[in-house]
Length: 469
Image (cartoon, rainbow, N blue to C red; front, top):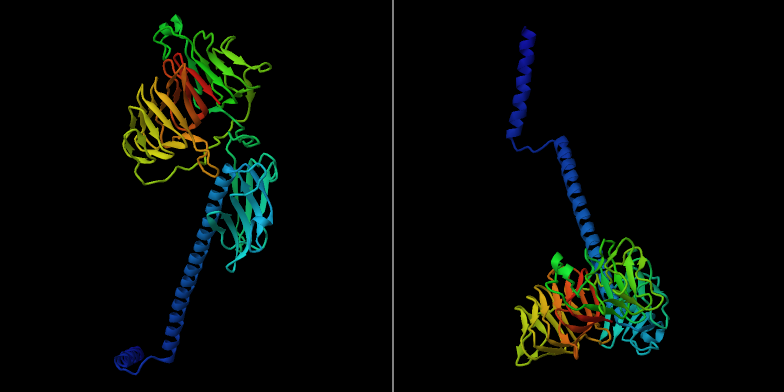
Protein backbone atom coordinates (compact mmCIF):
# COMPACT_ATOMS: atom_id res chain seq x y z
CA UNK A 1 0.00 0.00 0.00
CA UNK A 2 2.87 2.30 0.85
CA UNK A 3 4.46 1.30 -2.48
CA UNK A 4 1.35 2.28 -4.50
CA UNK A 5 1.12 5.57 -2.62
CA UNK A 6 4.73 6.36 -3.38
CA UNK A 7 4.29 5.49 -7.09
CA UNK A 8 1.29 7.87 -7.38
CA UNK A 9 3.32 10.55 -5.72
CA UNK A 10 6.09 10.17 -8.25
CA UNK A 11 3.61 10.43 -11.16
CA UNK A 12 2.15 13.62 -9.77
CA UNK A 13 5.59 15.05 -9.33
CA UNK A 14 6.53 14.25 -12.95
CA UNK A 15 3.33 15.84 -14.24
CA UNK A 16 3.87 18.92 -12.14
CA UNK A 17 7.39 19.21 -13.55
CA UNK A 18 6.09 19.09 -17.14
CA UNK A 19 3.42 21.70 -16.38
CA UNK A 20 5.97 23.88 -14.72
CA UNK A 21 8.30 23.63 -17.68
CA UNK A 22 5.47 24.54 -20.09
CA UNK A 23 4.83 27.68 -18.08
CA UNK A 24 8.43 28.73 -18.49
CA UNK A 25 9.94 30.18 -21.70
CA UNK A 26 12.73 27.64 -22.02
CA UNK A 27 11.40 26.72 -25.56
CA UNK A 28 10.71 23.33 -27.18
CA UNK A 29 12.66 20.20 -26.86
CA UNK A 30 14.65 18.87 -29.80
CA UNK A 31 12.11 16.11 -30.43
CA UNK A 32 9.23 18.61 -30.50
CA UNK A 33 11.10 20.82 -32.95
CA UNK A 34 11.83 17.87 -35.23
CA UNK A 35 8.18 16.78 -35.23
CA UNK A 36 6.98 20.32 -35.98
CA UNK A 37 9.48 20.70 -38.81
CA UNK A 38 8.32 17.45 -40.40
CA UNK A 39 4.66 18.45 -40.21
CA UNK A 40 5.34 21.89 -41.70
CA UNK A 41 7.34 20.27 -44.51
CA UNK A 42 4.47 17.93 -45.32
CA UNK A 43 2.01 20.83 -45.44
CA UNK A 44 4.27 22.99 -47.63
CA UNK A 45 4.92 20.05 -49.96
CA UNK A 46 1.19 19.42 -50.39
CA UNK A 47 0.52 23.09 -51.13
CA UNK A 48 3.41 23.24 -53.58
CA UNK A 49 2.20 20.14 -55.40
CA UNK A 50 -1.31 21.62 -55.64
CA UNK A 51 0.11 24.82 -57.13
CA UNK A 52 2.16 22.89 -59.66
CA UNK A 53 -0.88 20.88 -60.73
CA UNK A 54 -2.95 24.07 -60.97
CA UNK A 55 -0.39 25.89 -63.11
CA UNK A 56 0.08 22.84 -65.34
CA UNK A 57 -3.67 22.43 -65.83
CA UNK A 58 -4.06 26.12 -66.63
CA UNK A 59 -1.28 25.91 -69.19
CA UNK A 60 -2.75 22.79 -70.80
CA UNK A 61 -6.21 24.37 -70.90
CA UNK A 62 -4.87 27.56 -72.50
CA UNK A 63 -3.00 25.47 -75.05
CA UNK A 64 -6.15 23.51 -75.94
CA UNK A 65 -8.15 26.72 -76.32
CA UNK A 66 -5.49 28.07 -78.65
CA UNK A 67 -5.46 24.87 -80.71
CA UNK A 68 -9.25 24.79 -80.90
CA UNK A 69 -9.28 28.43 -81.99
CA UNK A 70 -6.87 27.64 -84.83
CA UNK A 71 -9.12 24.80 -86.00
CA UNK A 72 -12.24 26.99 -85.95
CA UNK A 73 -10.63 29.84 -87.89
CA UNK A 74 -9.18 27.49 -90.51
CA UNK A 75 -12.48 25.64 -90.89
CA UNK A 76 -14.49 28.82 -91.40
CA UNK A 77 -12.22 30.22 -94.11
CA UNK A 78 -11.81 26.92 -95.96
CA UNK A 79 -15.57 26.34 -96.17
CA UNK A 80 -16.11 29.78 -97.72
CA UNK A 81 -13.22 29.49 -100.15
CA UNK A 82 -14.27 26.09 -101.48
CA UNK A 83 -17.88 27.23 -101.94
CA UNK A 84 -16.87 30.34 -103.86
CA UNK A 85 -14.27 28.76 -106.13
CA UNK A 86 -14.45 27.46 -109.69
CA UNK A 87 -10.94 26.06 -109.95
CA UNK A 88 -7.98 25.30 -107.66
CA UNK A 89 -4.26 25.01 -108.22
CA UNK A 90 -1.07 24.32 -106.28
CA UNK A 91 1.99 26.40 -107.11
CA UNK A 92 4.56 27.99 -104.80
CA UNK A 93 4.41 31.15 -106.93
CA UNK A 94 1.19 31.99 -105.03
CA UNK A 95 3.13 32.24 -101.74
CA UNK A 96 5.96 34.63 -100.89
CA UNK A 97 8.79 34.50 -98.38
CA UNK A 98 9.79 30.96 -99.27
CA UNK A 99 6.52 29.51 -97.99
CA UNK A 100 4.95 26.40 -99.53
CA UNK A 101 1.63 26.67 -101.30
CA UNK A 102 -0.89 24.16 -99.96
CA UNK A 103 -3.74 25.14 -102.32
CA UNK A 104 -5.12 28.23 -104.06
CA UNK A 105 -8.73 29.07 -105.00
CA UNK A 106 -9.78 30.94 -108.13
CA UNK A 107 -12.94 32.01 -109.93
CA UNK A 108 -11.19 31.75 -113.31
CA UNK A 109 -11.74 28.65 -115.43
CA UNK A 110 -7.98 28.13 -115.76
CA UNK A 111 -7.28 28.71 -112.07
CA UNK A 112 -5.35 31.94 -112.64
CA UNK A 113 -5.37 34.98 -110.36
CA UNK A 114 -6.48 33.13 -107.21
CA UNK A 115 -8.44 35.14 -104.66
CA UNK A 116 -7.15 33.04 -101.75
CA UNK A 117 -3.95 31.02 -101.24
CA UNK A 118 -3.10 28.78 -98.28
CA UNK A 119 0.62 28.89 -97.44
CA UNK A 120 2.83 26.95 -95.01
CA UNK A 121 6.23 28.01 -93.66
CA UNK A 122 8.12 30.14 -91.18
CA UNK A 123 7.08 33.72 -90.52
CA UNK A 124 7.86 35.96 -87.52
CA UNK A 125 9.74 33.13 -85.88
CA UNK A 126 6.74 30.77 -86.04
CA UNK A 127 5.84 27.89 -88.32
CA UNK A 128 2.46 28.97 -89.61
CA UNK A 129 -0.38 28.23 -91.99
CA UNK A 130 -1.64 31.48 -93.47
CA UNK A 131 -4.39 32.54 -95.86
CA UNK A 132 -3.27 35.19 -98.33
CA UNK A 133 -5.60 37.33 -100.39
CA UNK A 134 -5.78 40.80 -101.89
CA UNK A 135 -6.97 42.05 -98.50
CA UNK A 136 -3.78 40.84 -96.81
CA UNK A 137 -2.50 37.82 -94.89
CA UNK A 138 -4.25 36.09 -91.99
CA UNK A 139 -2.66 33.47 -89.73
CA UNK A 140 -4.86 30.37 -89.51
CA UNK A 141 -2.46 28.15 -87.50
CA UNK A 142 0.19 29.83 -85.32
CA UNK A 143 2.43 26.94 -84.21
CA UNK A 144 2.25 24.30 -86.93
CA UNK A 145 4.46 21.24 -86.69
CA UNK A 146 7.47 20.49 -88.85
CA UNK A 147 5.47 18.31 -91.23
CA UNK A 148 3.73 19.98 -94.18
CA UNK A 149 -0.08 19.81 -93.76
CA UNK A 150 -1.74 17.16 -95.90
CA UNK A 151 -4.19 18.44 -98.54
CA UNK A 152 -6.63 16.12 -100.33
CA UNK A 153 -9.25 17.05 -102.92
CA UNK A 154 -12.13 15.13 -104.43
CA UNK A 155 -12.03 14.29 -107.28
CA UNK A 156 -8.66 16.06 -107.51
CA UNK A 157 -7.01 19.39 -106.74
CA UNK A 158 -6.36 19.94 -110.46
CA UNK A 159 -9.83 18.88 -111.61
CA UNK A 160 -10.99 21.02 -114.58
CA UNK A 161 -14.36 21.51 -112.88
CA UNK A 162 -12.85 22.23 -109.48
CA UNK A 163 -12.95 19.90 -106.48
CA UNK A 164 -16.24 19.05 -104.78
CA UNK A 165 -14.48 19.09 -101.42
CA UNK A 166 -11.07 19.99 -99.99
CA UNK A 167 -9.64 18.57 -96.78
CA UNK A 168 -6.57 19.87 -94.90
CA UNK A 169 -4.97 17.95 -92.02
CA UNK A 170 -2.69 19.95 -89.72
CA UNK A 171 -0.46 18.76 -86.87
CA UNK A 172 0.66 21.45 -84.43
CA UNK A 173 3.95 21.51 -82.49
CA UNK A 174 2.22 20.02 -79.44
CA UNK A 175 1.23 16.96 -81.47
CA UNK A 176 -2.42 18.03 -81.64
CA UNK A 177 -3.86 17.05 -85.05
CA UNK A 178 -7.06 18.40 -86.58
CA UNK A 179 -8.73 18.17 -89.98
CA UNK A 180 -10.82 20.87 -91.63
CA UNK A 181 -13.16 20.28 -94.58
CA UNK A 182 -14.74 22.56 -97.16
CA UNK A 183 -17.46 21.27 -99.50
CA UNK A 184 -18.96 22.89 -102.57
CA UNK A 185 -22.67 23.60 -102.49
CA UNK A 186 -24.80 21.05 -104.21
CA UNK A 187 -26.40 23.27 -106.87
CA UNK A 188 -23.20 24.79 -108.25
CA UNK A 189 -22.46 23.89 -111.86
CA UNK A 190 -20.17 20.90 -111.85
CA UNK A 191 -20.36 20.81 -108.06
CA UNK A 192 -22.14 18.71 -105.55
CA UNK A 193 -20.70 16.19 -103.24
CA UNK A 194 -20.02 12.64 -104.21
CA UNK A 195 -20.64 9.63 -102.04
CA UNK A 196 -23.36 8.11 -99.97
CA UNK A 197 -24.94 11.01 -98.10
CA UNK A 198 -23.68 14.16 -99.85
CA UNK A 199 -26.41 15.69 -101.99
CA UNK A 200 -25.69 15.73 -105.74
CA UNK A 201 -26.47 18.71 -108.00
CA UNK A 202 -30.14 19.42 -107.40
CA UNK A 203 -32.98 21.80 -108.08
CA UNK A 204 -35.39 20.66 -105.40
CA UNK A 205 -34.76 18.71 -102.20
CA UNK A 206 -37.66 18.02 -99.82
CA UNK A 207 -37.61 15.74 -96.76
CA UNK A 208 -40.61 16.49 -94.53
CA UNK A 209 -43.65 14.38 -93.64
CA UNK A 210 -45.41 15.57 -96.80
CA UNK A 211 -42.52 16.62 -99.05
CA UNK A 212 -44.28 17.51 -102.30
CA UNK A 213 -47.95 18.24 -102.85
CA UNK A 214 -49.51 19.51 -106.10
CA UNK A 215 -53.14 20.33 -105.48
CA UNK A 216 -54.64 21.97 -108.53
CA UNK A 217 -57.39 20.98 -110.98
CA UNK A 218 -59.75 20.19 -108.13
CA UNK A 219 -62.53 17.87 -109.20
CA UNK A 220 -66.02 17.81 -107.77
CA UNK A 221 -65.01 14.77 -105.71
CA UNK A 222 -62.01 16.66 -104.28
CA UNK A 223 -64.32 19.50 -103.24
CA UNK A 224 -66.74 16.98 -101.72
CA UNK A 225 -63.93 15.23 -99.84
CA UNK A 226 -62.66 18.51 -98.42
CA UNK A 227 -59.18 18.27 -99.95
CA UNK A 228 -57.17 21.23 -98.67
CA UNK A 229 -57.14 24.09 -101.18
CA UNK A 230 -60.02 22.61 -103.18
CA UNK A 231 -63.02 24.84 -102.54
CA UNK A 232 -64.24 24.67 -106.13
CA UNK A 233 -63.43 22.93 -109.39
CA UNK A 234 -60.36 24.67 -110.86
CA UNK A 235 -57.80 24.27 -113.64
CA UNK A 236 -54.62 22.33 -112.95
CA UNK A 237 -51.51 23.46 -111.09
CA UNK A 238 -48.23 22.54 -112.74
CA UNK A 239 -44.72 22.17 -111.36
CA UNK A 240 -41.95 21.99 -113.94
CA UNK A 241 -38.50 20.99 -112.72
CA UNK A 242 -35.58 21.73 -115.03
CA UNK A 243 -33.05 19.76 -113.05
CA UNK A 244 -32.96 17.06 -110.41
CA UNK A 245 -35.92 16.69 -108.05
CA UNK A 246 -35.17 14.70 -104.89
CA UNK A 247 -37.97 13.63 -102.58
CA UNK A 248 -35.83 12.69 -99.58
CA UNK A 249 -38.40 10.98 -97.34
CA UNK A 250 -39.48 7.35 -97.08
CA UNK A 251 -43.12 8.10 -96.23
CA UNK A 252 -46.45 7.15 -97.82
CA UNK A 253 -47.66 9.90 -100.14
CA UNK A 254 -44.24 11.54 -100.26
CA UNK A 255 -45.48 12.97 -103.55
CA UNK A 256 -49.20 13.66 -103.76
CA UNK A 257 -51.01 15.00 -106.84
CA UNK A 258 -54.68 15.84 -106.33
CA UNK A 259 -57.33 15.75 -109.00
CA UNK A 260 -57.26 15.16 -112.74
CA UNK A 261 -54.51 17.41 -114.05
CA UNK A 262 -54.40 17.57 -117.85
CA UNK A 263 -51.71 20.13 -118.61
CA UNK A 264 -50.82 20.24 -114.93
CA UNK A 265 -49.16 17.88 -112.46
CA UNK A 266 -45.42 17.30 -112.31
CA UNK A 267 -43.01 17.71 -115.20
CA UNK A 268 -39.45 16.54 -114.73
CA UNK A 269 -37.60 17.74 -117.80
CA UNK A 270 -34.26 16.01 -117.30
CA UNK A 271 -33.24 12.38 -117.54
CA UNK A 272 -34.01 10.77 -115.16
CA UNK A 273 -34.76 13.91 -113.12
CA UNK A 274 -37.28 12.58 -110.58
CA UNK A 275 -35.82 10.70 -107.59
CA UNK A 276 -37.43 9.35 -104.44
CA UNK A 277 -35.95 7.80 -101.31
CA UNK A 278 -36.61 4.07 -101.16
CA UNK A 279 -39.78 3.48 -99.14
CA UNK A 280 -41.57 6.62 -100.30
CA UNK A 281 -44.71 6.40 -102.42
CA UNK A 282 -46.41 8.61 -104.99
CA UNK A 283 -50.16 9.13 -104.64
CA UNK A 284 -52.12 10.23 -107.70
CA UNK A 285 -49.08 9.87 -109.95
CA UNK A 286 -50.88 8.17 -112.80
CA UNK A 287 -50.64 8.63 -116.54
CA UNK A 288 -51.05 12.26 -117.51
CA UNK A 289 -50.07 13.58 -114.09
CA UNK A 290 -46.30 13.16 -114.44
CA UNK A 291 -44.41 14.06 -117.58
CA UNK A 292 -40.83 12.88 -117.95
CA UNK A 293 -38.24 12.98 -120.68
CA UNK A 294 -38.11 9.79 -122.81
CA UNK A 295 -36.39 6.99 -120.94
CA UNK A 296 -37.41 8.42 -117.61
CA UNK A 297 -39.58 5.96 -115.72
CA UNK A 298 -40.65 8.02 -112.70
CA UNK A 299 -39.45 7.90 -110.05
CA UNK A 300 -35.92 6.54 -109.69
CA UNK A 301 -35.43 5.24 -106.14
CA UNK A 302 -32.26 5.75 -104.12
CA UNK A 303 -30.85 5.05 -100.66
CA UNK A 304 -29.59 6.20 -98.16
CA UNK A 305 -31.13 9.62 -97.59
CA UNK A 306 -29.11 12.69 -98.50
CA UNK A 307 -28.02 15.16 -95.86
CA UNK A 308 -29.07 18.80 -96.04
CA UNK A 309 -26.29 20.30 -98.21
CA UNK A 310 -26.54 23.70 -96.49
CA UNK A 311 -26.70 22.51 -92.89
CA UNK A 312 -23.40 24.21 -92.01
CA UNK A 313 -24.33 27.61 -93.46
CA UNK A 314 -24.12 30.21 -90.68
CA UNK A 315 -26.47 33.10 -90.13
CA UNK A 316 -25.34 36.57 -91.20
CA UNK A 317 -24.47 39.10 -88.55
CA UNK A 318 -25.15 42.79 -88.67
CA UNK A 319 -26.37 45.63 -86.50
CA UNK A 320 -26.78 48.49 -88.98
CA UNK A 321 -30.49 49.31 -89.33
CA UNK A 322 -32.06 49.02 -92.75
CA UNK A 323 -34.59 51.54 -93.96
CA UNK A 324 -36.97 52.36 -96.79
CA UNK A 325 -37.29 55.83 -98.23
CA UNK A 326 -39.72 56.47 -101.02
CA UNK A 327 -39.46 53.52 -103.39
CA UNK A 328 -35.99 52.30 -102.29
CA UNK A 329 -34.97 50.07 -99.38
CA UNK A 330 -31.42 49.63 -98.10
CA UNK A 331 -29.91 46.45 -96.63
CA UNK A 332 -29.56 46.05 -92.88
CA UNK A 333 -31.57 44.97 -89.85
CA UNK A 334 -35.37 45.36 -89.90
CA UNK A 335 -36.86 44.88 -86.43
CA UNK A 336 -40.41 45.32 -87.65
CA UNK A 337 -42.14 43.54 -90.54
CA UNK A 338 -40.79 44.67 -93.90
CA UNK A 339 -44.03 45.48 -95.70
CA UNK A 340 -44.00 46.16 -99.45
CA UNK A 341 -47.20 47.88 -100.56
CA UNK A 342 -46.11 49.73 -103.70
CA UNK A 343 -43.41 49.64 -106.35
CA UNK A 344 -40.14 49.10 -104.44
CA UNK A 345 -36.48 48.46 -105.23
CA UNK A 346 -34.14 46.62 -102.86
CA UNK A 347 -30.54 47.81 -103.02
CA UNK A 348 -27.89 45.03 -103.12
CA UNK A 349 -26.98 43.46 -99.78
CA UNK A 350 -28.30 41.35 -96.91
CA UNK A 351 -31.69 42.11 -95.35
CA UNK A 352 -31.95 40.71 -91.81
CA UNK A 353 -35.68 40.40 -91.12
CA UNK A 354 -36.53 39.98 -87.44
CA UNK A 355 -40.32 40.07 -87.90
CA UNK A 356 -40.84 38.63 -91.36
CA UNK A 357 -41.91 40.24 -94.63
CA UNK A 358 -45.05 40.77 -96.71
CA UNK A 359 -45.54 41.83 -100.33
CA UNK A 360 -49.06 42.97 -101.17
CA UNK A 361 -50.95 41.92 -104.26
CA UNK A 362 -50.43 44.46 -107.03
CA UNK A 363 -47.11 45.67 -105.59
CA UNK A 364 -43.82 45.46 -107.47
CA UNK A 365 -40.54 44.33 -105.88
CA UNK A 366 -37.19 44.28 -107.68
CA UNK A 367 -33.65 43.76 -106.46
CA UNK A 368 -30.31 42.47 -107.71
CA UNK A 369 -27.63 40.91 -105.52
CA UNK A 370 -29.84 40.58 -102.45
CA UNK A 371 -30.37 37.99 -99.73
CA UNK A 372 -33.43 37.96 -97.50
CA UNK A 373 -32.51 36.42 -94.11
CA UNK A 374 -35.84 35.71 -92.42
CA UNK A 375 -34.68 35.40 -88.82
CA UNK A 376 -38.17 35.34 -87.30
CA UNK A 377 -41.77 35.67 -88.41
CA UNK A 378 -43.50 34.59 -91.60
CA UNK A 379 -42.84 35.59 -95.18
CA UNK A 380 -45.71 36.11 -97.64
CA UNK A 381 -45.52 37.22 -101.27
CA UNK A 382 -49.12 37.55 -102.41
CA UNK A 383 -50.46 36.69 -105.84
CA UNK A 384 -50.55 39.24 -108.67
CA UNK A 385 -47.43 40.93 -107.29
CA UNK A 386 -44.62 41.69 -109.72
CA UNK A 387 -41.43 40.07 -108.40
CA UNK A 388 -37.96 40.25 -109.91
CA UNK A 389 -35.30 39.30 -107.35
CA UNK A 390 -31.85 37.81 -107.86
CA UNK A 391 -29.14 36.64 -105.45
CA UNK A 392 -25.52 37.71 -105.22
CA UNK A 393 -23.16 36.20 -107.78
CA UNK A 394 -19.99 37.77 -106.37
CA UNK A 395 -17.05 35.34 -106.17
CA UNK A 396 -16.11 34.53 -102.60
CA UNK A 397 -19.43 35.73 -101.17
CA UNK A 398 -20.42 33.11 -98.54
CA UNK A 399 -24.06 33.58 -99.58
CA UNK A 400 -23.47 33.44 -103.31
CA UNK A 401 -26.59 32.04 -104.98
CA UNK A 402 -28.77 32.27 -101.85
CA UNK A 403 -31.89 34.43 -102.24
CA UNK A 404 -33.98 33.49 -99.19
CA UNK A 405 -32.44 31.98 -96.05
CA UNK A 406 -34.73 31.09 -93.15
CA UNK A 407 -32.71 29.49 -90.32
CA UNK A 408 -33.57 26.29 -88.49
CA UNK A 409 -34.68 28.37 -85.49
CA UNK A 410 -37.66 29.69 -87.50
CA UNK A 411 -40.39 27.19 -88.37
CA UNK A 412 -42.82 29.73 -89.85
CA UNK A 413 -44.42 28.83 -93.17
CA UNK A 414 -43.43 30.68 -96.35
CA UNK A 415 -45.85 31.64 -99.09
CA UNK A 416 -44.19 32.74 -102.32
CA UNK A 417 -46.36 33.79 -105.21
CA UNK A 418 -46.70 36.48 -107.83
CA UNK A 419 -46.61 36.96 -111.57
CA UNK A 420 -49.18 36.53 -114.30
CA UNK A 421 -49.09 34.63 -117.56
CA UNK A 422 -47.46 37.47 -119.51
CA UNK A 423 -45.02 38.49 -116.73
CA UNK A 424 -43.72 35.63 -114.59
CA UNK A 425 -42.35 36.37 -111.13
CA UNK A 426 -38.62 35.69 -110.83
CA UNK A 427 -36.95 34.36 -107.69
CA UNK A 428 -33.47 33.86 -109.13
CA UNK A 429 -31.68 32.20 -106.27
CA UNK A 430 -31.95 29.33 -103.80
CA UNK A 431 -34.82 29.36 -101.32
CA UNK A 432 -33.53 27.62 -98.17
CA UNK A 433 -35.86 27.07 -95.20
CA UNK A 434 -34.90 23.81 -93.43
CA UNK A 435 -37.38 24.13 -90.54
CA UNK A 436 -40.35 25.83 -92.20
CA UNK A 437 -43.51 23.79 -91.79
CA UNK A 438 -44.20 24.35 -95.48
CA UNK A 439 -43.33 26.47 -98.49
CA UNK A 440 -46.23 27.27 -100.77
CA UNK A 441 -45.17 28.09 -104.32
CA UNK A 442 -47.93 29.79 -106.25
CA UNK A 443 -51.32 30.96 -105.04
CA UNK A 444 -54.31 31.29 -107.36
CA UNK A 445 -53.13 31.84 -110.92
CA UNK A 446 -49.48 32.62 -110.14
CA UNK A 447 -46.81 32.23 -112.78
CA UNK A 448 -43.34 32.10 -111.27
CA UNK A 449 -39.77 30.88 -111.62
CA UNK A 450 -37.54 29.82 -108.70
CA UNK A 451 -33.91 28.77 -109.12
CA UNK A 452 -33.95 26.02 -106.46
CA UNK A 453 -35.69 25.05 -103.22
CA UNK A 454 -34.32 23.16 -100.21
CA UNK A 455 -36.94 22.63 -97.51
CA UNK A 456 -39.16 20.08 -95.79
CA UNK A 457 -42.61 20.35 -97.36
CA UNK A 458 -43.44 22.08 -100.65
CA UNK A 459 -46.92 22.85 -101.93
CA UNK A 460 -48.01 24.01 -105.39
CA UNK A 461 -51.68 24.89 -105.56
CA UNK A 462 -54.46 26.61 -107.49
CA UNK A 463 -53.96 27.32 -111.15
CA UNK A 464 -50.28 28.12 -110.60
CA UNK A 465 -47.52 27.53 -113.10
CA UNK A 466 -44.24 27.11 -111.20
CA UNK A 467 -40.88 26.39 -112.79
CA UNK A 468 -37.80 25.37 -110.82
CA UNK A 469 -34.32 25.55 -112.31
